[in-house]
Each structure stands twice: as C-alpha cells, then as structure tokens.
Length: 160
Image (cartoon, rainbow, N blue to C red; front, side, top):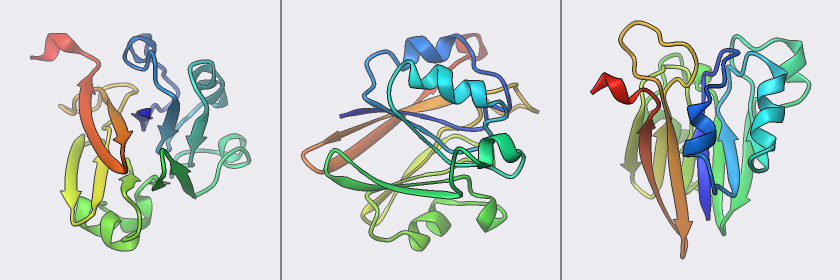
C-alpha cells in the first residue's frame, strides 16, 4: 500500500504534490492545514486522514481530530500534529504510541524518517510556504507484508 504524507500546508497546496502523490492509496495530513479546501483537493487523489494543528481554526477542527489512529495495510498508524510535545522528536512520538508501526507528525517543519524500535516516525516537513531555510517537502510511505518504509520527497528540486 502506498501512502502520501503531508503536513504544515498552512493554506497552500502546491501543484507538485499532485505529481508526487500520483498513485497513492491513502493520504495522511499531520495538521496545520490552513484551508479546508486543501482536504477536498487531496481527497480527489485518495482518501484522506487528517488531524488539526495548533494554527488550524474551527473550520478544520470540526472536520478532523487531534489524534487519528487507523489501520492501513494491516498495520496501526497514528497521525498527530506534534504540538502536544512542544518540540516533537521521533523518540517522543514513538514512546507515546509504542504499538504503532507508523507515527506521522509535523509541527517542527523539519523533515525526517527515523526508526525508533518497532515504530517508524515520519515528519514530512512543511509542504506550504517556505519558512527560514526549511525545505519544502512531503513523504511517501509503503506498507508491504506488515513492514513500513518511507522516504522524503523535496517539492523544490532547485534547492539542491
């Protein structure tokens, strides 16, 4: 199963996301959506599971939850924004959800994929407007035979 992972769009859904997410079977949005239309646009690609982030208003919060726990491809997946941890790290999010094979979070805008014990922690980075020197990115995950792998995808290839 192929999964698109996105976070911190802050009201901007870049056209590159549609190319990178072509063929995904599910999309996880880890909050700070910014505009509810983004959830509808992503749903045109694949089913979406989204959570709200600290800057999301009522319009997003009424459509999402603070924490989403779902099963995809036979594994437990948890999606959070990360503000619950102040400065979220792979160790913190994995410790909070030790029975999840995949924990997706955002908030810090720092993309990473890190295995912590049996949990793969993924922060896709910020897909919205670039802030500071943070890259603009998303992630792609694959679940096969109960095993989760993921990789980051830079949405601004000129940044090499």
